[in-house]
Image (cartoon, rainbow, N blue to C red; front, side):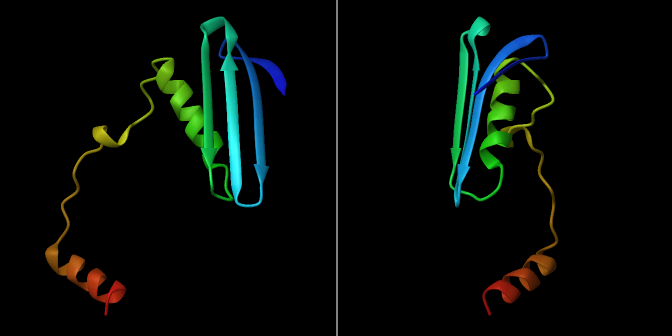
Length: 88
């Protein structure tokens, strides 16, 4: 466990990982907020997720959630080539 201040807030946190799994727990006791994230990946996915969830909880508008993403138009011919390459 470690205790520090981040962006003026007290943070009590504990990361953890083992082969094929990682986790992040972040507690902001003064704000009555706890964020826990678990991932079955061998990368810091849980830390990234916990960081973004925390930012959203504190109204950080820099985090973009999937529903806020815009559409991208793709050419049907390009999609056909990709589909053929994946599923011959």
